[in-house]
Image (tube, rainbow, N blue to C red; front, side, top):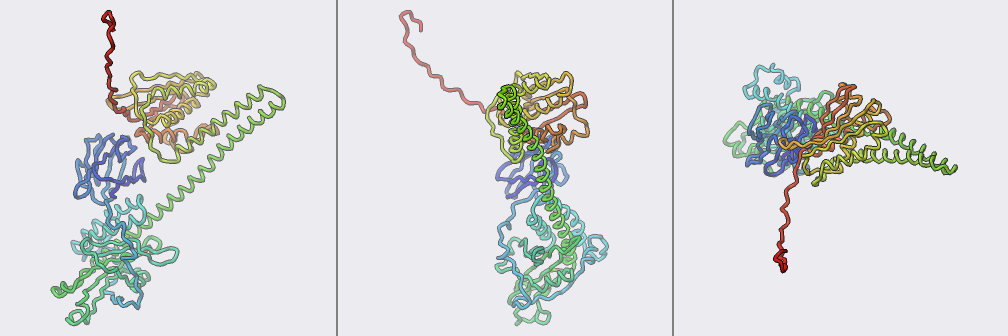
Amino acid sequence: MASLFVIQGRDQGKRFELDNGVLGLGRDATNPVQLHDSEVSRRHAQIVETENGYDLVDLNSSNGSFVNEQPIHQHPLASGDRVRVGRTLLIFTPNEDNSSIDLAEEVDIIDRNHPVEGSRIIKAISPEEGGRILAGTDMSASPWLARARSNLQVMYRTALAVSHTLDIDQLLQRIMELIFEWVEADRGCIMLVDRDTDELAPKVFHHRKGTQSSDKMHISQTILDYVMDRQEGVHTSDARQDERWDPAASILKIGVREAICVPMQGRYDMVGVIYIDTFTPPGQMLQNRETNRFSEEHLKLMVAIGHQAALAVEDTSYYSAMVQAERLAAVGQTIATLSHHVKNILQGIRGGSYLIEEGLKLSDTNLVQKGWGIVEKNQEKISHLVMDMLTFSKERRPERIPTELNEVVDDVVELMNARAADANVDLVWKPGSDVPTLTFDPDAMHRAILNVVTNAIDACEDVEGGRIIISTSYEPEEKRACVLVEDNGEGIPPEDMGKIFSVFESRKGSRGTGLGLPVSQKILQEHGGDIRVESSPQIGSQFFLEFPAIIPAATPPPETVTQQLPLSDSGST
C-alpha cells in the first residue's frame, strides 16, 4: 500500500497508509492524515488516487503545499517525493509490486563447480577509480555519466531521508529502484553481510517490468568472493571469446548473460554487494554482434552507487541502534522515576496506617481519622499516577459522544474546590453562555482539564492571594472550542517553556510526577487540538486547551401524533 512517512515535525516517525479514493490532510481530526502542526491548516490538502498513482492537491491552505520544495496546487507524487506542509516533511512511497517476492525462489548463489558457473571478468574497477566520478575529476566521462553523477547526490539524500523512517528492507528496495532509473538492467539483487555468519544473504530482488525470467538469478560464488576480498567492482559475462561467433556454439542457443557486481564499502566495514544482470536472447545476438549491454561507465556508476548505498545502510543501522538505545534509556528513566514516586506514596500510606493503628490501640477516633485522611490522599495519588500512565502509554481514539463542555468543566471545578481551599487559592468558574453541545470524549477531556487545574493550584499555593479563573468559549467561525485556565502564580521561566510538556519534567519536586501536562497535551492532540501556553514569571500563566468544535449531527424530532379528544358538552376540550 502507498504511504506517507513523517521524517520531520511533531508527528515524526508516523506512517500514514493511503487507501483508495480521496484522503484529507490537515490538522483537523476528521482527516485520515492528521498532523499536529500549528502551521498546517485544518483542511490543508487532499491526496487523490488517479489512474497513474496519487496526486497532492492543495486546498488553498494558508501556508501552501510543497513537493520537493516547489510550491504546488496539484502535483502527481512519485516515489521518494518530499512533501512539505507547514513545518512537517513527509516522504511518499508508492505501492511496491515486489513486497511479496520470495527471495529463495529468485536468487541462488552457486559454487565454483556448478554447471552454470562460466562467467569471466571483463573489467574490474577499484572504489577509488569509481569514486572519481563523484568528485568530478573523471574528464573522460560521457554526458550520460555526467548526468548520472549530478543526480547521484540527490538520489543519496533521498535514500538517507527514507532510511531515517523505514526499515532496512524498504531502504534497499528504494536504492534498487534508483539503480534501475539509470542502468538498463533486467534483474537486480542487494545482498548484505550477516554479522552472525559473515555470509552474504539476499535482502532485495528487483526486475524490470516485462523482462522477468522464469529461471533463478544465479550468482557466482567466485565472483562474490573476488568482489568481497579485493573490494573491487567487476563486469562479467558468460560468453566465451573463442566461441562467441561460432554458429554451432551453445552460446548462440542459450544467449548471453552479463552482470555487474560491486562492493558496498561503508565508512568502517564491508556492508554487502549489489548485483545486477542483463540477458541478450540468441535472436538479438545474431542481429547485433555487440553483445555487451554494460559498459565501463555503467561499472563506474555502480561502484559509486554501491559506496553511497553502503553509507545509507550504515546510517540506517546506526539510526535503528540509536532509537533502540533511546528506548532502553527511556525505559530505565521511566522505571527509576515511577519507582521514586511510588516509594513516596507508599511512605505516605505507611505513615497513615501507623496513625490508624495507634488510634485503634488508644481508642482515639481523631487519630484514626487523621491517619485515614493521609491514606485516602495517597490512594488518590496512586490512582492519578496509574491513570496518567495508562493514558500516556498507548495511542487511543477518543470515544466521542455528544457532551456539554460546561458540565465537564463544572465537575472538575467541584472536584478541585476542596483542594483549592486547602491551598488558600480562590477558584473562579466562568462558564461560556454560548458553548453548544459538542462531540468529544468527556472522560479524557475531564482528565486533561483536571491535570491543568491541579498544576495551576500548585503554582498558586505559595502566592499570597492566589487566584485561578477557569472559563470556556466557543468560536463558531473557527469551529473551535477552548477551555482557558489562567492563574496568578509563580509563572514559567522562558528557559523552561520548552520542557513543560516533556515526560517526567516536573518543577514540583517530590510532589509531581511529570506526567500531568504531557498527558493533557496528548489527549488534546488525540482530539485534533493542542494546548497553547502564555506565561510570565511572577505574574502568572494562561493555558488554552483548544480543540475542534464538532457539533453533533441533528436528529429529526419524533413524529407528533395528534389525538382526537372528545368534545365536552360546552364545546371545549
